[in-house]
Length: 368
Image (cartoon, rainbow, N blue to C red; front, side, top):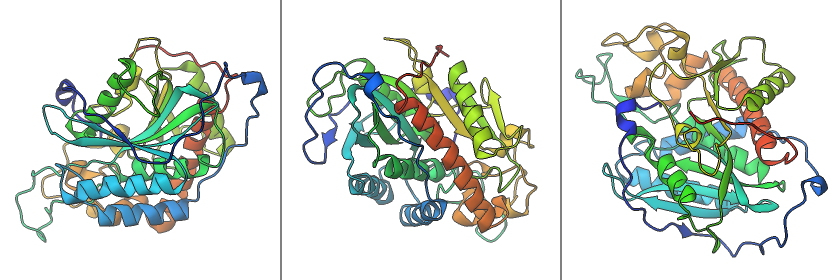
């Protein structure tokens, strides 16, 4: 979910060391890599059926992903295991803030031809369930969440992007990242971006890392063609916007189903940690969210409401109810959910492709 602006100002305390958890990486590239010699592969395609099966298993096994609960730590271990199974170098970036100690971003790293320039691709795996509903379960005011859409959807789409791109050599190094602490104020994204920009993130013996691109996915998949809820696009790069719209047209998105915006109606998400950077240069950043509230749906949600019985436009019920069942209900059924996830993952794959696999594409960016 997009956290409120008041939470964003939390400061990050000194970071704990991350820990590499896979085999020794390949030897570093000697000399400057040559973009002209790089062969650009075709854009790979995720399998939405498998993605949704893995998503259901993940949010069912680890529904309470907050406050360092057993579910929270279990989710971290599950994510490390999935990344490792794809042959990626796994990295657990431990950090602490004034809100919560011992948080962790989970990374699966696909080394590029250029090992010093990195593209981040991610979504947040932590959840929050707000105690705003006093009635007991069964009275139409139950507090129940698996973080299925917010942001199990973006997390598992990131995992499956990691799987399909693990088979292809990128030009820039890809860091597929499950962020922690988003619901506490974008803490995990801010912590790792700060560590990189200050030269304090050491992976495979090197801290010579520059972030050259970012894709953030938060609440994505309930969209065309399953529903006519557009995907909202936020970016600080005109060239990136042009490429996203071209990719959407190639995939088949109708006009109006990708909505470029300058900002959200309320709050923010992990992308903000990247497009605020100005040293050594701004980072081209792309953010996708398909959130009905952005269409102007009524807010606040009526007290006592129950997601499946409310008009379309109110999901994900802002932390009070976000389960596999409610996600499917708001998509209008399993097939609609599948079709939306397929289209969204196809679009996300195109973004990863132009960020990390096309070194001759020059992306502008401004600080926001």
